[in-house]
Length: 155
Image (cartoon, rainbow, N blue to C red; front, side, top):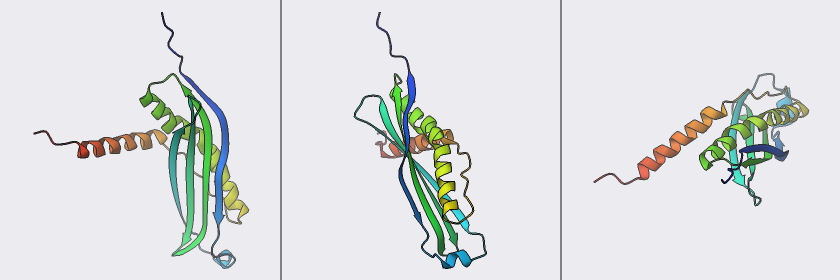
């Protein structure tokens, strides 16, 4: 009787892969009294590492604050982690990398963004909770639609 590998999930390392801050209109922007419009975008990417079962997941968060056309600040954080995912079918591994790993990275990205913005002299921007499962399901739906559009029509 052959033993099937037990599913395993582990966090090997969490780190900031890249971090940048721009305040292109300093010092004059600090004299403005209006509250800026804040835009936040989040992107996740996962890639396998050479060692079997290890994956790097990178959550890139970009926060842009604008007053009209003027950029107040721009912060970009690439929060990353190395995760062990073993013993799962590929579709379940994809779900772990697209849902569990970003959920693990979010608090670290939240802290990095808030810290950078406040160190730059602005009130901190706090990232809200994100539903990575809904985002993952939406990405799957879009991929299915794209594949259906590329498939030849039945004759």
